Structures are given as C-alpha cells and as structure tokens.
Length: 140
Image 1 (cartoon, rainbow, N blue to C red):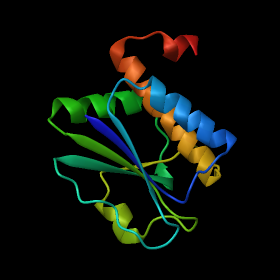
Image 2 (cartoon, rainbow, N blue to C red):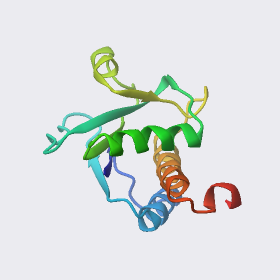
Image 3 (cartoon, rainbow, N blue to C red):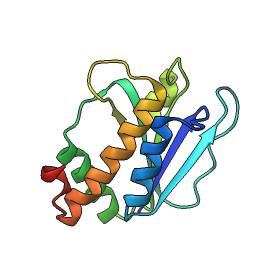
C-alpha cells in the first residue's frame, strides 16, 4: 500500500526536511511526498482505492500500535493508497474533516507544520516496522 503524504507549504532546507528524508529512505513501504502551495493547488485525484487521514488537532490520539493496526487492516482489505494530509495554518474545513476516513492528532498540543510532517514520517516508519516485526519500535 502506498503511503502518500500531502502537505501544504514547502519544507525547503531545514532540520525537519532532513528528518523527513531520513525516514523516507528507511521506509520499506512505497512512499510518495506531495507538496502543495499554502493556498490553492489541488490534491491529485487517486487512481486506486484509497483512505484519507487528516492530521487535525481534534483527531484521535492513537498509539503507534493502533496506527499500525489501522494501516494493516486497510492494506489487507485491498486499499492501494493511504493519504495523510497536513493542511494549511488554519487547518482543514468541516467538510474535509467529515469526509476523512480518520482524523489523527499528535496529542493535544499544536505543532509547527514542518515538525508535524517529520513526526508523521517517523510514525509511518514506526508503524511499518511494527507490522514487519522489526525491533525499532522498542529499541528506538
């Protein structure tokens, strides 16, 4: 299953960009990173069955194991793509939240956009290593 991270704003050269690149290289699942402008731009239309996850402060605060289990279920049910969407500074619209398959939060705190992107990449890597039985989850 393709893990597709769609984010508003350019990450450019930054410490967060280095972390994103580090986890992108380590992931064994297919990964695609799409950057959209702060305003405008369109999320590309999917070519296959997919699920949408919005990173949203009102979302569920899942454990890494819970996220891994959700990804495993989607993969095993034939989903070809899981989209993880990080919105602009003002977040997602009510309609976008209502249409999403999952709202995901990283705790109750508000995180800088670039840090949230790096944290998402780490959690995707961690979830896939949990499913592979790799020791990273407990050793990392």
